[in-house]
Length: 181
Image 1 (cartoon, rainbow, N blue to C red):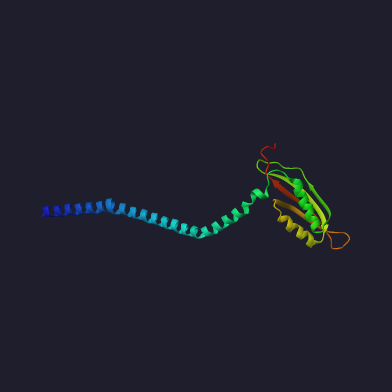
Image 2 (tube, helix red, strand yellow):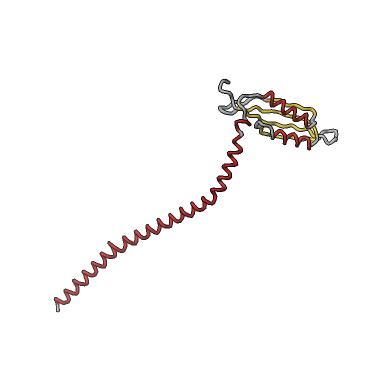
């Protein structure tokens, strides 16, 4: 009987060792691997969802890129090489005259030099009806030279005739020539 009990204890110990071996060296490592695989799968799903979301935005980004390319396509033409300020000032004065604006003043300021882009501040002043001044600005915007309007001041004339005095500060850009200092 003692042998039988000893045998049962040995079988029980061997069974316990087999169960422990299965749990510690089989089940738990496989469970950790399964959890790692599930985490990797979840991460992949997130990446796929993000890519799908970004893919839907791709046509919008392409459209924006085309818009920017078309806006920048005329850069060479709108920012001429060389100063060529005289002809531009004549164009501005001509636009003022064309719109029947009076008391015209177009005066360049001191040039600001940079590496690849120089600018010349302009002070413009004239007098006319608001519609005429608005037309002048629209035509100025359509010129083939880049002009940035920094400030606009409109003041009613003192004589109450519907005339407006316009004072504008603008900047005209140009690319310096290589042979220029």
